[in-house]
Length: 405
Image (cartoon, rainbow, N blue to C red):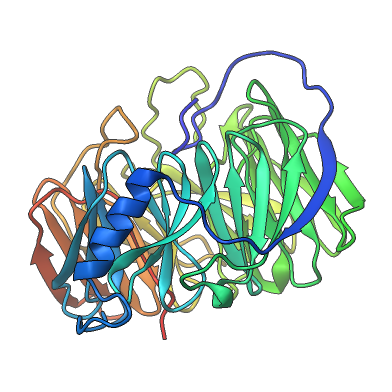
């Protein structure tokens, strides 16, 4: 199974017992592996650990490359720190204005991006998957164990924060999100078959569930806390205590990656309709209206990848196309209102772990990576103006950062 772009797993094993209620509270310190601890110690000595004179990084952006991570100043894009870290690593916002979560071979490791260093805090677990921040909680999903970990990102520091854990019935490539009322929405499945979601109350008793979502993958939250979960034949929308299925307009219509905004009731999703393609290069995106329960397809005239979707400061739907442009879509009408030229034309590689241009948006700024040119660019979304650019020693892969101040 591929753990980055949600590629469909075609095994047909039956789904067993779906979910076990296993809630524990933990407040223990991190227990990183030796290699992670050594790198944290090395990073701390040279990169802004408490007691050193290293200058904090303003609104840091973190970029992965083959063998490490760059920490950049979010305004100038100057490289503040180069942190070696072997393996294929991924990055996500931790949910506060200082930290990011780094997915490594052994789990989720906390990076102090402002202090330009890896900490010793690690949430261990094989095949670390989705990181979701919503309503003051950050939720981690370990694909290798099916364990869900929930914590308050404001408690992050040099010791592991108190966390709540929940055990799925079986390991699978899943995702979970904690809502403002304490409910937990989490996926159902095994390594062979993923079928839907369950919603657990604050007491972790089941509120409702749906198993009408083959190949369940990805999540996004829209205005009024409507949750959208992708399926191979549409999406599930959880809102006001009920789950509703929104069918795809084609027989096979897979939505596996979504981008939501608190400013809009419409969720942006990808859309693939060739069930047998080794690598489909879609040219349509989906817009899911959580009010009406309807899906609209928008043809943008170029292909894109799972790292191409984002939302603007006013809820605009943003898609980085292989034509090198950011396509700005009005989510209410489905019209492409603007195209912002950023890069030259590019093509998605077959291997999902290989670098391809990525889009990360924070406030009014879009950060776009250019692996072939070894560059990172900052673009003002509303004016289309290039705010900054930098050339990197290595080709960038994933791009992320802390929340804006």
